[in-house]
Length: 170
Image 1 (cartoon, one colour):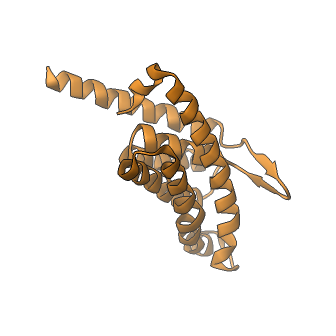
Image 2 (cartoon, rainbow, N blue to C red):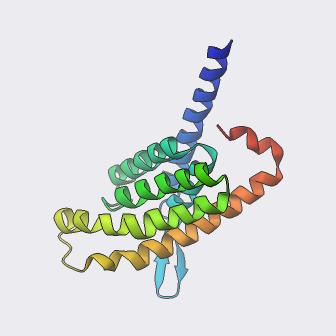
């Protein structure tokens, strides 16, 4: 009986990852103008949701799959990988350690906005021919991840009001 329950939970997790990947891939072109910049917050929102609802491992898996699909269909760049992976990892770890959803949002901003931005520099230099400073990625990555993390946090707060939605916590 326990094995059947474990299989059900892992199937639920696979389905949840698949849904988040589909959402992240389809909504990738959605952007929000903020001042002179445009931010693309969907992946960051998904990183927070996956980190809280599924954990760091499935969150990273969802980020890798979403980045791969976006690159394959032409709506993403190689810079999607370092930003989303570190953001999802830190969002999941921050939630696991603190059990507070806002720490997952902070983990996303630190993971994507700072660590992912700095790791993106060599990717941009070698694959895209970027010749600027490494710090040039921090402001746009941090701004986009902040907006996405706030949206993800708002969705989590709405879900927490509906106790039936909490069955997706795996």
